[in-house]
Image (cartoon, rainbow, N blue to C red; front, side, top):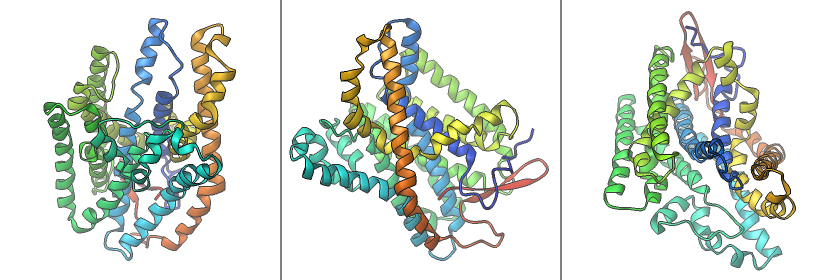
Length: 415
């Protein structure tokens, strides 16, 4: 079996991994299908099963977490021992994440109230908790209050995942810097075990399901598992020994998730069974998919899917899509759609739901593309002042050798 990543699109000079862009594309599509299917109503059994599947789209967040753990850990592992370890990492993360995040918050919390003084009263939950959003602590606020606030016109609930990732970015570089490689394996293993134990403890103590869903300590297993995979693919044997275990794990975890889906008519984030077992299965399935996407040969059905241009397209703009898709649609589009294209305007009621889904994704995509090319990319040009130095073998931090049966190739992550 050829387990080499496609060398035509994976070189030392590359700035991203195409297969992982495709995986990001799957994750963001799962999230958007989840958030934009509110207009559909299960009139038929087949549509009901479709809705149950789409309502499981929150698992795209687990996929994002595992991907973040893998890529960020890889960058840090490769940069360890080189000049400006902390400076370069935090500067590059800041240039990638902060411009869109804080630019958006500045618009909605500063500029909009100047134009529309009634804005704070129309979105009390968002404005009362804006300090938590500015400081990337919104998930802790929601977990403490056991409820989502009254957002009104400004829906920011999905920012809890950005808070979890930013908390990871703040702490993890120090962990990697001071830990030995064996110590990092141990830390990742402990976190992978502690998180599900905390979720079970939440259930045993009758905590609301929201706590286990969004509290950072309860979700750190995804990020740690990604970190462990980053360590594993950097062994001398490379990626090849991981492919068969990943395939077996993907099948086993997928079957368990399917059984939970069938027995509970879907996979919802607050289900006790999901929090006891399903979250861990989602973690394993996401990590296995990561390995299999990296290992997919460039030819054949699997390779074409894992390097799909459509999925990579959505993956490229996934960050902008994630930040903007809910507030943009609710602010600029949701009311207009409901007023002008009401469900009764369609011959079939479900057609309105699919029309809404298509238009909401399209508008989100246009906004994300504009944000990337006109705004975010301008800040990314400054990354040249924070370049990682080359190692002894000439590979930049975030790159790894994927050993195949007869040769190897290098891939580099987008930092």
